[in-house]
Length: 439
Image (cartoon, rainbow, N blue to C red; front, side):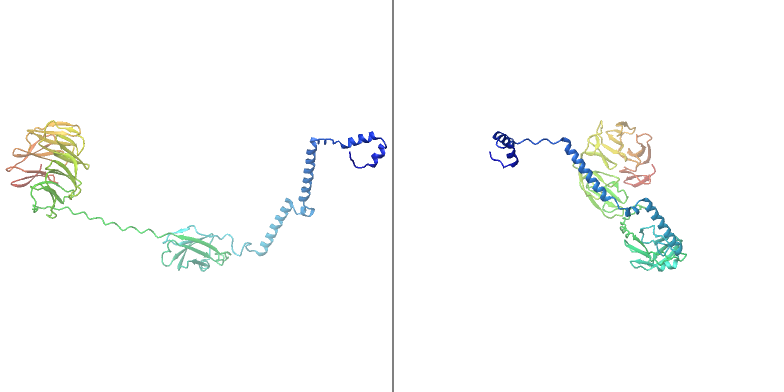
């Protein structure tokens, strides 16, 4: 086994080979490293942290000189010295410390948005020298103005009478403006206001069509080109609708102008208060048209004996059944109606069946037999309370149920037409002419 020479060991071993062999064996062996003490690392960490803190504390600790001017006592002493100096300067100068003017003079405006026809108001917190203020004012954009004082308020009004619309005005009051005690305000004041926009132009008023004056009929007037039976009037009373002898539904103005055919082959017609017209053709179909003959259309009813308008709705008597036009039946008549008329309010129906005359209350579906039997012509009063009818050789007026009937005139020959006039009179037409009778 090779080893490094060691003079001291060689002198100890001498010539004893056994001892030298044992020493070589011990030298060649490797011992395991001893384990560290568990508390060693914690103790080492604690010592390092303490050393670091002491180093930091030494670095931030101020010097004795700096500690002399630190702390609350030095701050209090400094504040007291500052107050003393300010007081000495104030007593010496007797003037404003923050400028050459009076610090309590405030310049402001209470209105940031100004109407075009209103002045710009500049307010001061104390009385001012008017002349010096007006000379110290500058306005942008440049505007010729007049001034008016109201107490401490200065009203600036443009000479033109109005400010420019939607414009920002800047008013500067220069520092030389003085108070009533001739003390300058010391610092220029700036005020900005904005004017309102121009009002939206009012739309041009829509021309309201002048209603056509109602025709005044003062006497008998012939309407040329007309013949047949009157079906009704327009709501304004200026147009008459009639059935010509050839079956034409025709309209004409009461001044005799604008004769117009609205429909042909018409057997019966009924005029509503809003100007629409329902008419039954000779083919049995029921049609509805406007007062000028436009927009004609079928409403799904046929063989109509009577019709009436209520709130723009059409109620018809067709094939013995009362129903809305094109709708389901409300009530069915027990017998055939030869002549029938709805009341103006379409709540009642009077019809003749053979020699019987019957009143139907549409709402209650109640039938009432009239005392008068063979009725030839009948027409309702505008308020639906009475009827006028032709029976025999006389014209009678009765209540809706036929009671209280009394003759109002003897017919001369044979009356052909009955109608209620707007004046409340009953008009009777016949070969002898037209009679107006108080009912």
